[in-house]
Length: 202
Ligand SMILES: O=C(O)c1ccccc1N[C@@H]1O[C@H](COP(=O)(O)O)[C@@H](O)[C@H]1O
Image (cartoon, rainbow, N blue to C red; front, side, top):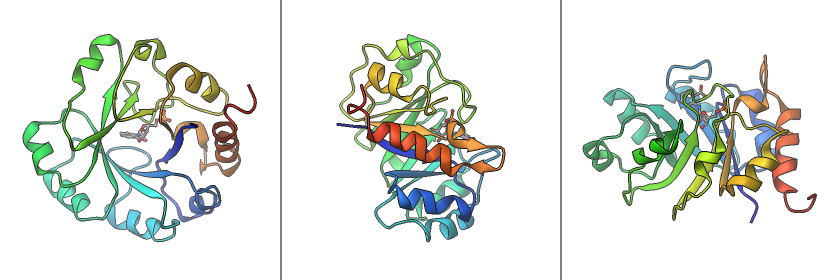
């Protein structure tokens, strides 16, 4: 089965129509220090324009408790957690979690936490949102029984090789579908076309 698609780092209303046109599976909002950071309130206004069936992902990096509470009450579908994740925090979180793993080498995989609330793992490089891929070889023999989300420097040029090598269930892109003005509809279309046609053009 072709992987599902997550487009991350939406900041503007003008970026929404192309996401609806292609019924992107997951759309991410960044609540962490980043050029893509949005407030929960602004993300709710953006979400109101998304197709109802598109799942929303709240992306955080060890957030302060007030922000976490705001997100937990915000009606997102998934919480994508970057950084260290304590057992007591997992207990407190009342929604499905994707744990982000910064991949440097095989040892990085030791940071994977197994918990029933963690329904997926986002494998990314050491600088999330930077557009830099990590060494995919590190994931060559990974076996997990939940969503395998591949992130980090994906774009329409490398996505076929990435799917061939890793067989992710979800591909996650931000920088690779941007221009200097933000999300670029043409880059999104090309990325989506490649993912949806995967298997037909080999
Ligand atoms: O996008 C960011 O700036 C960001 C900041 C803090 C944590 C995560 C962030 N983004 C995540 O990075 C990948 C996409 O990376 P890339 O730009 O395609 O290389 C994705 O998981 C975003 O959720």
